[in-house]
Image 1: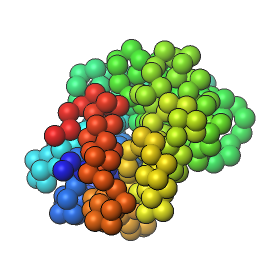
Image 2: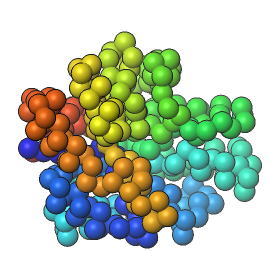
Image 3: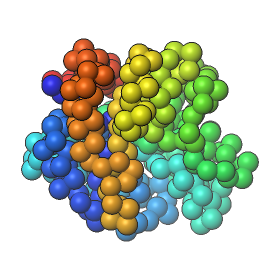
Length: 277
């Protein structure tokens, strides 16, 4: 049975390939390796994103070659980068740098080296109104690029509500991007169409979240948001969590094999245009 973790980070300073091995040993088969900021690759211009993205792509190659897990990659400028760029360059130049990062990420998707734009969006904490508006503009730009290259976007934002999902749905509509190509990572168990408005929730694999999402019956992906930070071991959830929780819920009769296939195979394939097998 394919087991897909929809949001997984790896950092050379953390467990790195050993984390991928832990995922595989527990039964994991596929991951969406999502780009994260690297402290030793400072972003002071848009072109710096190209260097950082290459590290994430190299990590994906190493996992494929040395661990045997099938890896898909999401790349994009991390939303909180705008705050640092604003301090260094000013807001207008910071926005331009972020959009340049989006352009580079879209090129990698177009070339077939990456699968999705992500994680992109806006800060998950309160910021000044001009930064908030600028972040929404950058997100809109990313959605338009995703429309052009035919890929999905993976959103990093504040914790969503049905109203937030409706806002993202309107943004996708304005960009001409299908709502089913917008993935809200680190989502709570809001999975019903009336809650998500067609946006795809990627539910954090806490057992209480998963049980509620399964009970509701709406479509969702499953993730750990493992960040591979040696200062926070196991955060957000450990690398083996998705395969272990899936096995536990199957064994308990909470999750059926058909439901597991929808979570780990059918929905990822449909959302990202990838082959899970």
